[in-house]
Image (cartoon, rainbow, N blue to C red; front, side):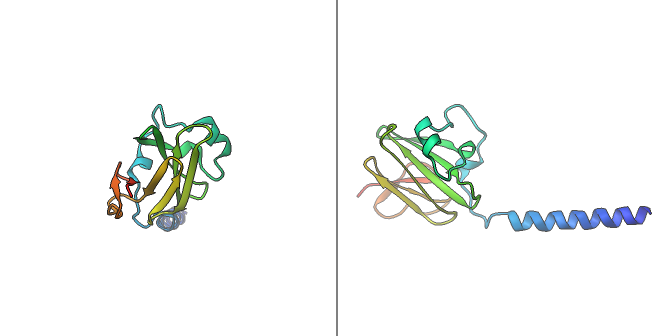
Length: 137
C-alpha cells in the first residue's frame, strides 16, 4: 500500500510540474507587474468602471508624463498586457495586446509604447520606465 501512495504522489507531482510548465510564459517579463501592490496602484473609478477586459487587481502605477498617469495591468486573459493612459475622467485610453510585442497607445494625451523588459526603445521615442516609452515624433 505504501508504494501505491508514493507512486500516486510521484505521478501527481509530475502532472503538476507539467501543468506549471504549460502555464509559464515564454520568458516575457514586465517588471512593474511583478511588484507588490502599493498605494496608488488602484485605477481611477472611470477606468475601473469602463475598463473592458482589464483585471483591475493587477494594475500597477508606473509613472507620469506631462500630467498623464500611466498604469500597466493584465487583461482577464493572462497572456494579454495593457497600458492605461489617464489624463482625467474624460481623457483616458487603454491599449492591450499579446505579451512580447510592442503595443502602441495613443490619444489626445500623447503616444506611448508598452514593451517587455529589455526591449529596445523604438525609433522616434524615449524611455520613460522599464516598460513604457514616450513617442517623441
